[in-house]
Each structure stands twice: as C-alpha cells, then as structure tokens.
Amino acid sequence: MTAKPDPAARSPFPVLIVTGLSGSGKSTVLRALEDIGYFCVDNLPLKLLPSFLQMQFHLSREGRKIALVMDVRTEGFLKNYDRVFRRLERIGYRLHLIFLEADEGTLIRRFSQTRRQHPLADKETISQALREERESLAGLRALAQRLIDSSNLNPHQLRELIMSEYSELAPRQRMWLHLVSFAYKNGIPPEADLVLDVRFLPNPYFVPELTQLTGEDHRVRDYVLGQGETQAFLAQLYEFLDFLLPRYQQEGKSHLTVTVGCTGGLHRSVVIVQTLGEHLKRGNFPFTLSHRDLTRLPGESP
Image 1 (tube, rainbow, N blue to C red):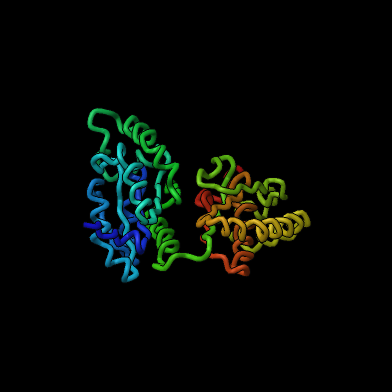
Image 2 (spheres, one colour):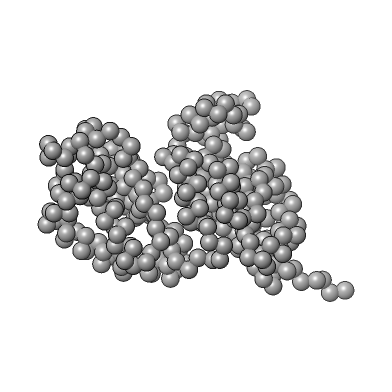
C-alpha cells in the first residue's frame, strides 16, 4: 500500500520555536504571540513535535501560525533538537527560531526577584547553572534566525518588540530594521549587525546649556544636525544604506540591527538614530527604535 503523502510536504507552513536562556523572557514572548493570534504551546516533549504539527495542519490552512517554547526543561531537547529540526525541514516545515538571552547579572537579578529556581540549579549555584546552560545552548543559538538580548528590555518593551515584528500572520515581504543607540563605555550591543561610531561628531555634553539635556531635546538635535560634518556623514550614510538594505532583503534577511554609538549614549547617537528613523520612513522600511543607555541621568560623565 502506498503511504499517504504528508500534508506538510504538500503545503509547508511556518512554525516559530521560542528558545534561549532561562529567565530571558520566553514566557513573555509566548504570551505576546498568543495575543496576536498564534496557537502557542509551552514545553511540548520533543518526540511529540512531528505528530503534533501534523495534527495542527488545519490551523495553517486557516492562516493561523504556531509557536512553541522549547528549552532545557524539554526532555531530550538538547540531545535531539538538531535531528528533529532537520527531519521537519526535510518534509516541508519552515522553522523560525527566536533565541532569547541576557547578560548574567540581569538573569541573576530576575531569578532573585521572582524567587524562581533555575532548572539546572539543583546542585549548583545560579551562576554555575547559567554558564552551563549558555554553553549547552551555543549550537542552538547559532541556528536562530532572530537573536534577542533582553538585558535592557522590561516585559512591556519585549512584548511590544515581539508584537511589532510578528503581528502579521501572512509572511513578511519587507525586512525589519532595529535602530539602537548606545554608549561605547557600556559596550557594543551583542545583537548588532552594523555598528556606526559617531564619536567623531562635536559633543553637546561639553556645551554647558546642553549638558543636562539628551538627544530627544530639540536643542541638542539642532546642535548635532547643525554641524557640517554631521550633514556630510548623513549624506554618505543614507547613500550607503540605500544601497545595502535592498540587497540584504534580496538575500532573504528578515531582520537587521543597526547600532549607533557615542561615548555616553545620551546625545549624538540618540540624534543620529532618530534621524535615521526619519530616513527609513521615507523608504517605507518597517523598523523599531530604542535608546539603550538613555535611562542614565543626563549630566553623568560621558
């Protein structure tokens, strides 16, 4: 008897796999996806994944997407995910992995605040468990289509980010850009694809009437954009991005994080990121915009 064709092979559909470090925000992501129409399942046993997806084939025909959280809690996940994922892709499923992470200090603070137990911390300290988990997930992280560092995102911001990127149930036709300003003294954002250094621009921090302000104030903006080198820089930057972004999109890249850094992350980088956002609006590119280090008090040494 001839085997009945797998429905997924005739009509593949995308499946979101949410994974990453414990405490990095996976539950927040899953709730956000559920709120925008995804059918969501947490901690499904890996061996049940293929049969579960076949059972949910009718959801894809109705235009609905599926999202699952799978991590170190899932039995057999670390040892077998590569084999199972490859099998699913061979028979037609399109897997999209979202990998969440955060720095060790942030994760320790979150576990302390919630009083939750890390799944690997039965006989180890929380720091040891986090390091072990990070090492064990390194291979999975390399497979992810989307990396999200939630160190500087509160649950509300993480929810907004997910909803802005994944709210459309139809496949996206445009690449999403993420514009992030940052302070070099606090390190380059780990999720950066492109890093722009604007420390060569005149620094408003050293203008007494601007020191206590930020790049969100029109006086700082006018100062930064009023410099001849700023205008020359932006003209070349726009030309560079107008050339680059369509080619990234043609290659199938779905997300691109452009980071702009200055010394303190309060003035020049903020202005340039906001100005870049205005340019992208004219090109009709969807984007998110955030200022990683703007939460510090103005006037702190840059």
